[in-house]
Amino acid sequence: MFIGKSTTPPLLMMEGGETPDFPDFEFETETGAATQQRHEPLWYVILHDDDKHTYQYVIIMLCTLIDGMTPTQAFQHACEVDATGHTIIARLPKQKAADKRDQIMRFGGDPELNSSISMTASIEPCDD
Image 1: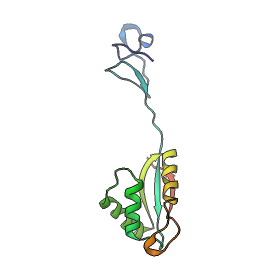
Image 2 (image 1 turned 90 degrees about the vertical axis):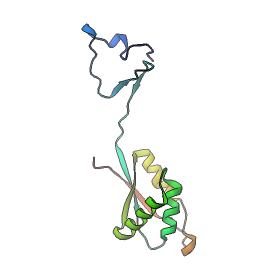
Image 3 (image 1 turned 120 degrees about the vertical axis):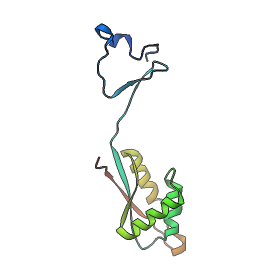
Image 4 (image 1 turned 135 degrees about the vertical axis):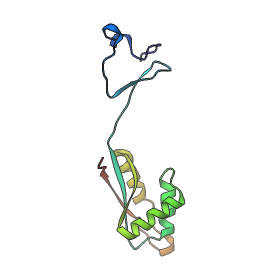
């Protein structure tokens, strides 16, 4: 790792003090340490509707499993999944999206309806 006052390692400085163009590389200006930015493609985590889970179950599950999800946001997702059959609940790198899908599908049944199965979720590549 390069540590110094320059924002570019000395070996990469070109004549006249110019620096080569590294589109996926960033140099930290405070420490001078080079760090690579990773631009992983994002994937949608999609929750699918069924008749075996209540709104309350969906809200509790989403607030438990999705970081930063508020009860109000979870309620909106519950309404959307009920009305349209699915809702996108997160955009994550592929492995994290797959892990989140698996957590949803292992969350368990809805005790209010004596359901023993978890909800269904899937992942798909993001459009953008």
